[in-house]
Image (tube, rainbow, N blue to C red):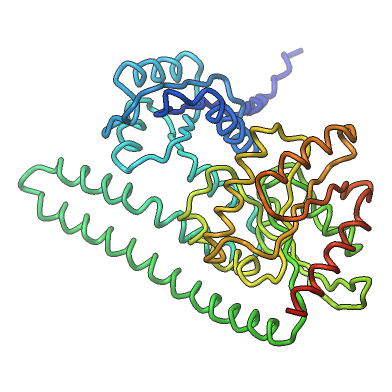
Length: 382
């Protein structure tokens, strides 16, 4: 009898490996950078990577060509080789030349924080508008990098072929500019239409309540609890890209519109806010902001999130927020003593009412609805 032929099994694809790198320019920062790095790791984990190493360099000024110093670049290059790394993730925002030089030095993909955020957005985008805005953000981010690559490539052409190289170079740039222009025009049409919808809604006199805050603070769980809906809830960042809407009747019989919006992230690039200007229109036009915080966060993390949250809201609304309630969520996961400690701590940073709740169990929801009702009546009585 002949031997049975063995079937060639397709090898199981392993989880991609990554290295996290950061240039720390503040030599006196012994804590803040750790919190920022932890947030960055959460974003990378959302992309399905296993982080094998974290490399931090403290340097007063970044190197213009590679961000990191020569020795650190070589250290990272060796780690990439030894650990079979797929992607090097850089916390700092990279210039086109830095990205190009690091990619060549490491021999693998290099992504900065802005690009990581865009990749997560791209994964979670379900509607046409979100996809358009993501496409534009990616094009605008990569445009200088693509220009640099094309320029370097065609400069290497021999003198005899230089005219062809220059033609191809300019053609590529023209195509890139055209793509950006087309996407911008499509987004502008959506923006004008959306603005008209929001203005009509404002004119209707229906108060607009907007749940905002950092990702994984429980905004969608709260939205579902109050509306009876079953919108997707996840601990992963940016599950909510497109706003969710539902009518909500307050105890005073006032009809309101409750909106669940896109979550924030620490060190959010202002350019990202501009790129997703339609998504944040709901926050801009809201009558009352419900700013969500996670009671599990450390005091240091809460300090950062409150400071940055207020700055982001100011960037979106054009002024420091006035009509706002701080919602301290997930109180079912800690002791009452910790809840009170965190509540007092936050109250020293902002002049707004702070309401502790558990959107999951319903604890504190009645109190929050009462406070919302009171705030809405005061806003519209003014």
